[in-house]
Amino acid sequence: MDSSSQAQGPWRRTSAGPGWGLGILAWLFARVPPRVAYVLVLPAICHWYTHFNQPRFAVARAMGRLGCRWPLWTAFKAYAQYAFVLVDRFYVRQGRLRVAVEPEGRDLLATAVEEPGPIVLLGGHCGALEMAMEALEDLGRPVHPVAVADPGAGTLFQGVGDPTRGFGFGRQAIVADGSVASGLRMLQVLRAGEALGFKADRVLPGTAPAEGLEVDFAGAPALLPAGPLRIIGLGKARAVVVSAFRTGPARFELLADAMDVTSKEPAVLGQHFADLLQDHIRRRPDQWFNFYPFWPEDEGPAASLPRTIPPWFRSVWPGALALAATWLLLVSEPSLLDGVSGVARGLLGVLLGGSGLVVSWRRWRSRLL
Image (cartoon, rainbow, N blue to C red):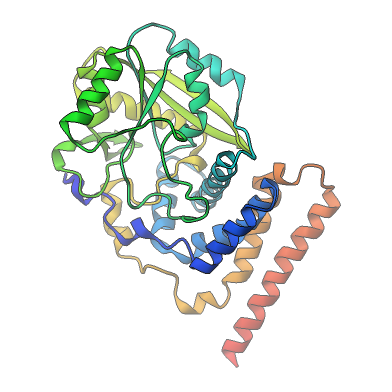
C-alpha cells in the first residue's frame, strides 16, 4: 500500500471561508467573551459541514466504521467540537481562558508513567492533547512535543488567531524533518530521562512508503507513521497512549493507557498503539479530528464526489444551517447557555430555526419564479 497517496485529495486544503468573514471573526474574538465566540462560530460550522462534500464524507465514513448509530450527526458534532477547540486555543493564548484538566485524568496519567526512565507519550488528532501540556509536565519531567508541518491541517478558521501554530503552546518543539539531527535530538531527550510527545495517527501527503505502517484500525487496513514507533525501540523507552478530550469551555479529561513495548518491532508496536487509540476514540468519536479519508480504501469514493454541494441545494441550505445550529446550541453544547431558562432556550430555537426556514423558502420560491 502506497502511503504517499494518503490524504492527497483537494479536501486537504478545504477553504476556511472568505477572508473578510475570517477578519470579522478575528476582530470580534478579540472583543467578546468566549461564550459569545462559541455562538458566533455556529454558522461557519454549519456552512463548512454542508458545503464541502469530501471532508463530510470522510468524517461520516469514519464514524460509521467506529460503530456510531448516526454517522452524519456524529460527524456534524465532530465539526462543532473541532471549532470549539480552536476557539478555546485562541482565548487560552490570549490569556483570557485557563485550561482546566479534571483531576481523575491527572491521577490516571501519573499511575501510567510513575516508573522512572525515558518515556514516549503517543496521542492522536482526537481531542486536544496540546491543551493538556501543563498537566503532562506536572508529572515532574519536561515534555518535548515533536511537530511535523502539515499543510492541510487546521484550515477551519485559519487566520483567526492562527490556531494551529505549534504543538505545545510555545514549548520548545522538536521538528521531525527526517534529518539525522532531529533524530539525535529525540534520542538525547530520552536518554536524559525526559519525555517526547507525538501525535501519531496521521501519515502526511508525500510520505515515503517505508515511513508508513499498515495496521488494522476498526476492521480495515490503515496507515500510521513509523517514526514515533521506531523512536520507542531505539530509545528503549516506555510508551503511554494519551488523549485529552474536551468536556466544556477549556475543560479537558485525560485518558492514559500504558502500551506493551515488550517487542521493539515497529509493526507490533503500531498495532498495540492502534488498538489503544481506538479504545480512546470510541469513547468520544465526535472528537476525532481527521477531515480526510483515514482509510486508504475510502480515498476513491471521496475523490469521486463533487467538491461542493450542487447549486440548487445552496438555495435552501440556510434553513438546514439554522436548524442544525439550533440543535448544536441547545443540545450538543448546553454549557454555552448556563443560567438561561428553558423558555428562553425554546424561544431562541424558534427564532434561529424559523428565520432560517423563512430565508430558505424565499430563496427557493424566487428560484421557481
